Structures are given as structure tokens and as C-alpha cells.
Amino acid sequence: MINKMVKQLKSIILFIFTAFMSVSLSASEVTSHSVDVAMQPLKQEWAEIKYVVSDKQKVSQLESLIKKVDVVASKHPSEAQPVVWRGTMMSTMASLKSGFSALSSAKKAKKDLEMALARNASAEKGYAHVILGALYSKVPGKPIGFGSKEKAKRHFLTALQMDPDGLDANFFYGEFLLSQGDFASAKKYLEVAQKSPVNAENKVLDKGRRQEIAKAIETVNQKLA
Image (cartoon, rainbow, N blue to C red; front, side, top):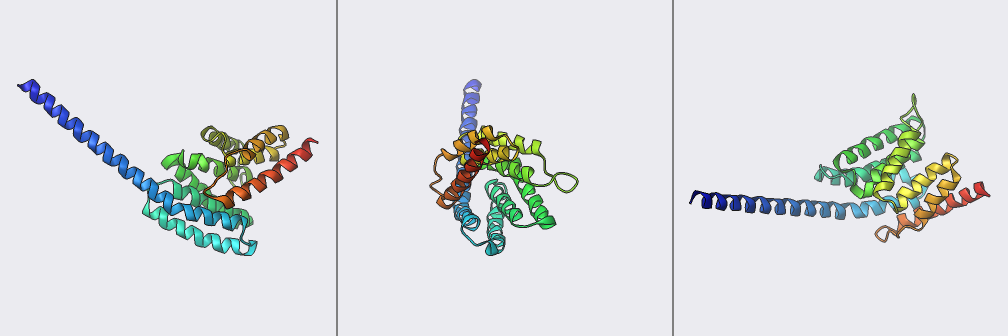
């Protein structure tokens, strides 16, 4: 009798645990979908600013866009995706500025990207690693900034492990290798980027990035000629 009651109790506990896990997973999936829906137009807006908007308007429009991302991030405080893209947008901001103003934006971008990695390193297929690699490769080193070619390479290689055929991971690493004078290796990664699947969800970004890739390949071919 006692053994039968123990078995029944175990069955009830297992049922409750399974039901709880199912509800938790469903809630997580709903949250992630909600973030995707909220971020998609903001990612498209960023691409428009980066590749279409005139240089005079880029900074002011990025500032407005980042405020919109702040709203999404505040509604989803545990999600990595909004922070990844806020860091990416702040990195774009840094590239449009100069001197200490650029460095200040770069530091803010770095903080966001590191926060995103702490939350979910694989979010957006490791895109935070890609942009962190770009920051480390382009920001001046100590004592002025935090730049480091070694850290840049480490982040790029981590991103490539997560997304080996990805457009951005291969492009940014190829661009880095080009800047380091490793032209043969740069061409290899740039050609992988060129053949990567089209980003149908963000055609402006896809087109703009592929134009950058084509230009980088042209430079590599000139160096190898």
C-alpha cells in the first residue's frame, strides 16, 4: 500500500514538473518571438541609416533609433538581442565621429556587446562577437583606447565557429586580415562571405554589405596581382 502511494506521488511530481517546464519553455519562446518582431523594423532602419541616409543625417537619426531600441531593451531586460543591436548601432555611431567623441561611443558599444554576450553568447548567431572584433581591430590601443589585434582575432574566430558560412562573420574577418596584410587568407574569407545566403529579411543590409565585400575583394586582388 505504501509503495503504491509512493509511486503515485512520484507520478504526480513528475507530471507537475513536466507541465511547469512546458509552460516555462512556451513563455520563453513567446518572449523571444516578441523581441524578434519588435527588433526587425529597427534593424531595417539601422541598415537604411548606414547605407542610404546622407552622412549629414546619420548621427541624428542613429540617436533617435537607439532611443527606440532602449524601449525594447527595457521591456525585455534579460534578452540579448536588443543589446546586441544597440551595441552595433553605437559602433556605427563611433565610426561617424572622431577623437574622444568616437572613443566614447566605442566604449558604450563595447559595454553593450559584452552585456549581450553575458546574457546569451549565441544570440544573433554570435553577432556580438563580430562587432566586438571590429571594435578591437579599429579602436586605438592603450593608453588611448582599448584596441587589441589579438582580442579582435579571438572574437572573429569565435563568431566563425558559431556561423561558419555567415556573411558578416566572414566579411569582417576578411577585412581584418586585409588590414593585417594577409591578402590570400583575406580573399578566402571574403569569397565565403560573397557566397553566403541572401538575407531576405533585410535586403538593404544585404545589398550594402555585399557592395562592401566586392570592394574589399577588388582591393585584395590588386594586392595579389
